Length: 118
Image 1 (cartoon, rainbow, N blue to C red):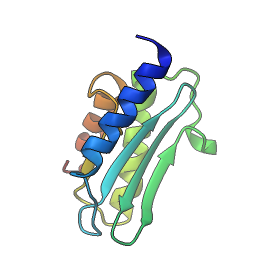
Image 2: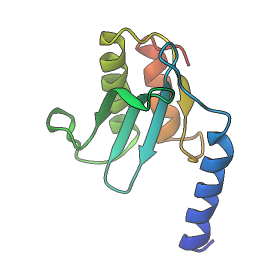
Image 3: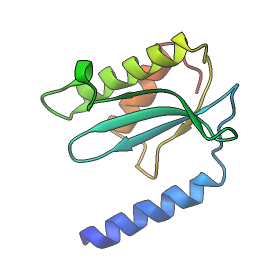
Image 4: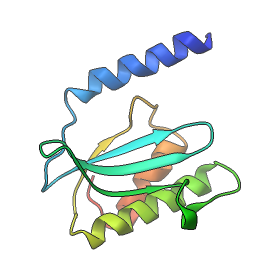
C-alpha cells in the first residue's frame, strides 16, 4: 500500500470514529497521536474545547531514546497521572485512526493500570 493511500485511510478512519467519540468534562476524550518521532496523549473536553491534561515525548521529563511499546507505556502512565491529579477518573479512548495494536494498545493498558476507566 502506498504511503498516500495509507495516510488517507487513517484520515478516513479518524473522521468515521470522530463522530462517535466525544469528550465531556466528566468523561473527557483521551486522544492519542503517534508520529514517527513522538507520542502525544491529551485529555480533551470537546464541549468546552479545552485540553484538561496532556503528556508527550516532546516534554522535557518525557524524552525517550526509542519510540517503542515501552515508551508508549511510560507516556500512557504519565498522561494518566496528570489526568488523575486533575480529578479525571474516566475517559473515552480516541485512538486517532490508528489500529488498536502495539503502541496504541500499550497506552490504553497503561491508562487502565493507572486507574483511568476507559
